[in-house]
Length: 235
Image 1: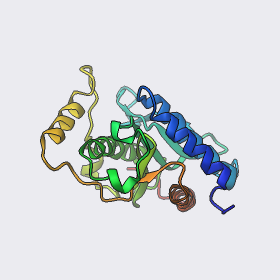
Image 2: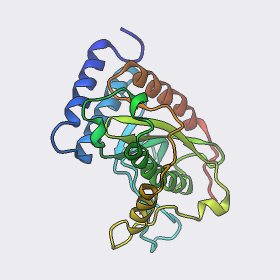
Image 3: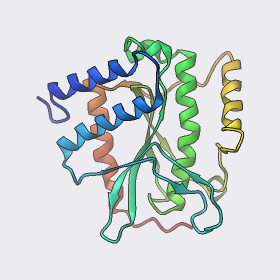
Image 4: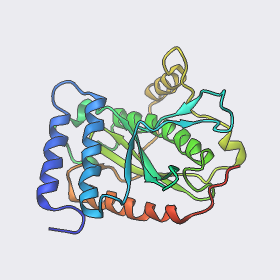
């Protein structure tokens, strides 16, 4: 047993990770696996260490009630104060697995695959706006880098966003619209048509491995330091 997750926990998550890439690849199944991973970490860190906020809506302009635009991380990680205010330490943006992930290959063997890069890069585009919205809602400190989990199926990286300038906070990279995420689809197509998709420079982890358990444990522990910050008054 180690202080991150015991052998039984790792086997359980590995079994789920494998099952999640059999049959029809489904993003909703991937949500379930990443949530199970977080629950296993709560068993180690304590039930009050963080709360899982699924599909957390963050208004893009919280000071403008008539502005209905918002960003929705697949998972928000945080705590709820006694007065009902949500403070976040991070979040997760999840994408459906790719075909190459079906037999759970070693992360190093798929990190250069174009489809994997595309999946991760699409999630990064959305996650950046989620972090910006979290800053504008006072959910996270405004003058520090924020780590976010970017997942594709049972694989994930941990990357940082910010701190942002005022101009950056006013600009959205991903603009959902009635045509069904047309801009994101356009960006995705451009990446597909490009011979060299943006490479994945962060370590790619696989849920159910000790390396992934250590990475998430450290991520959760380091992110908890943000709760003590009073630098949440934006603008």
